[in-house]
Image (tube, rainbow, N blue to C red):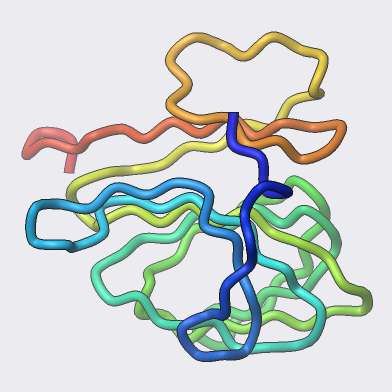
Length: 148
């Protein structure tokens, strides 16, 4: 169980916000293979760029997400996938948070399922993130040549 309240926030790479890194794995060369984090979103901001990563973004409150010039209004629980190299920004009417799962392109693929906290986690979950009265179950599928 990953509990964001037990992790101190750190600044985004671009300094435009903060995140709580909950779990991550790197390869022997120090390259990130996957990372699970919770972003505090309290003002309109561009996202940091993560070359070679794929991002699964889960809005935990209402916001507008712009990816490479295309804007989508999102509500709590909605998900978006985009490349770490994409030009991404959020705009807000009120502060909120978001779950981010980043995976090294071609090595892993993430899936996230939200459920009520009192429901039992399904089998095959790699990590569960505590989100108050909800939990996010994260699956990190290792990709092979056949699944890419």
